[in-house]
Image (cartoon, rainbow, N blue to C red; front, side, top):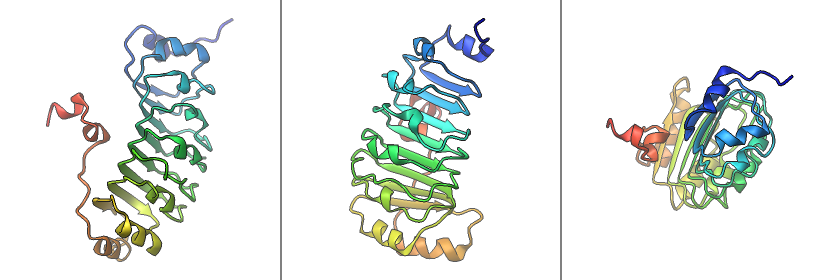
Length: 220
């Protein structure tokens, strides 16, 4: 007897799924039929079979939240991503796949305490904006700062910023704006960093606004 699917999944099969948010479900390979036109996908603790996302040729936005994955294998082959967010995935420690996402323009990493290093972004010539936050185990921003055309760097709450990181940011030829939303971080830690870098602050807009998506810009 076939396993009964959640009502949310059954409903998705009968509607347009260009923008889709899924919560606590398990996908199967056959779901490609109703996922094939998806452009923006948010997954809240969703189990995904290997290779499924790579088969969604229209997918350019991926937001992964929750769960216990240790790496980004779920995104293997999703080569058209322009936006990637990884938020509070408990076991996440290996972000090496990011270094292969050459279409990426916006990278958002938050609440990943087991991540100790960032992969080299030297090949990510399209990466313009990075938002990093609550990466308590991170030793250095060096891998990210290898992105040659990074224009905006936004830090959020607790994150380690070394002297070498500060020097790299100052010396980076493309970075035009820097900000640190330093809630719960002592001024003695973030103040000197902002003073030394001395760049204009990053504009506080949502990723949707940053990309100029109609549903985000219409009300502005």
